[in-house]
Image 1 (cartoon, one colour):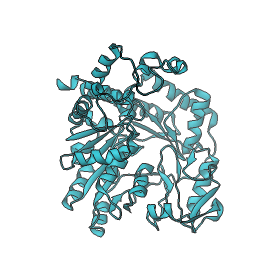
Image 2 (cartoon, one colour):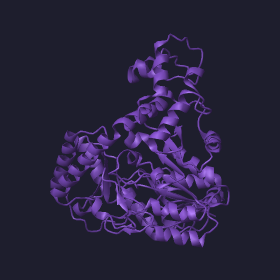
Image 3 (spheres, one colour):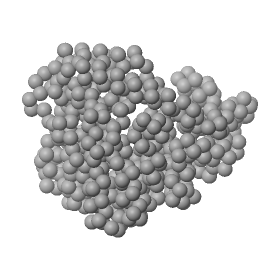
Image 4 (cartoon, one colour):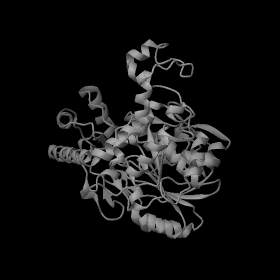
Length: 480
């Protein structure tokens, strides 16, 4: 633990800041002198540390000193064999995992309710998805976790699959039985990849669900900027002992920038140190705040803030109690409607709202007075906005039918049709509400009447729908 008190990259930046180095390198703003408005917005110290790679500060593409030391400390803190600092968000970490184990034509088993970054990776590398469709909670309208028995059946049906990809936890806090999934996969010679974007904190408190590394996964992508406290867009890719770290670095360098932000990198180093030294008590407090909020919201009536009572040992193997997901449809309000009201009328910005739920992200920077303000606002919304729920759409996740591999569909000859006329056609692009970024339709999937109705309903409720070439999502690209 004494080593975890160090933050080598942060320390190197501090030493650099104290020197009066004359910059004849990039960035061109030259410590902010060339862009005073930027200095006014971000501050002189921040802009002054927006520097380029140089020998005293190491190089992210080929780290040999302070970045390498910082990554080694991060690996130790997370219980991994190796770690890589990522400055392209967890999207880049997810895609690097898939590129590292899959080549064109390789099969990868995954649930369909993955983030778009995973399916984008399949388009880019040509791997073929084998979907294990998750069980859906019909009341809440959300997809649940990957069930080991369904996964085992998929492995038996596809013995040539090279990997399994699991999103754990889901945006809503649902956790799969990672230990069983790892055991089944490794017995069949498959790699286990985990999108742990929303589970950074799992490694720092034993009262939380098991982390991917502790469960024996081969690779895991953690969003330090979500629950770990680092700057937006910073992430960490974790590797187990069985993975060739030098090869993974080559894969990362195929797409990662050669001009990494030292603001992002240093935030990863500082946040790792904070979590290693204080994570246990910090997340104990987060769990207490989220549990308090859950109890208060459920006491209002009309809302349902769900938690550990959902655990059933299979599709919900465990639950992340730091997630404050709230079902709103019994009030006659879609989650996105409550999301908009909270922002527009109460100056409260939550993480997202979908057709049936909202998610308020509770983390290490929250205070109990913020929780009280949220609960008070939800009470007011119930009192002033409640309406008849007749006619509301219930499903949040519509299980799609895959007809053509994503890569083949995305690059195929296509035609544009009005959305209402696309039924029975094969989609060649993405349609998704963002957040959470789980595709309603992905390239290669059948457009059904149910999906069209879902998209129209989401548009009417003012969800942020994106992914299509047509900005207004009135038309859809389909196979010719």
